[in-house]
Image (cartoon, rainbow, N blue to C red; front, side, top):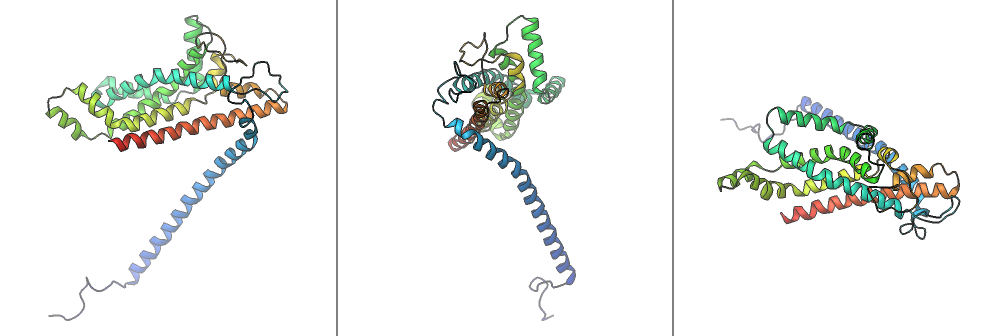
Length: 302
């Protein structure tokens, strides 16, 4: 019987293994450095944009009446008024689009995950992919040709919302579809074993389980459409006062206010441009925070 040290107990000190270990360590350090460098390079323009917008727009956002007044009666050179009318228009147009797009997108996602087999499911998936790649200007022109030219309706905030529905719908479908796929099949099978119909299983078990991710995706979809400029340029006119009628008359929005005030070369006009841009960033940031909070609260309740 050998009295030497076993292979298990003795460390391997072969030069080959040392070489391999050193090579892997070098490759790992290089890969880590590349990833960190890429992250830093990508972060530079983001921080630069945020710094520029905050520096130039902070004075406007913190001015008196910025959140409570409109620009009605305000001269181009006056440092007065606010974005109350434009903020209202932005939230209303995005809200109407969400009211239309969320039920349609959620039902389409449920169909694709729970019932989708055959040619209709493939066609639906293909059309959602195509719609996701449609530029906002194309969606606006389509609504203009159908809603205004063909049906004879006037330019309005509701027409803008219809164009935003086309942009929001594929985002809602894809996010809801992925969340529904994450629901374990064991939950469905347990429900079926108890004799619960499929539609009730979807309504009572599948959708509530996926609700945190679905709500987060919906809020992110709203944040994605809230800054679209092409629909508001084509489908509604600018108004310096607030308009509560979404079916008739001009209505301002933050992107439309920015575009309009760009033609004002005076200092007051530039202050409104940067202030409206910072306001839009704040609104989008709040929507992202709400999405994170909603996801955490609903996940904690499960």
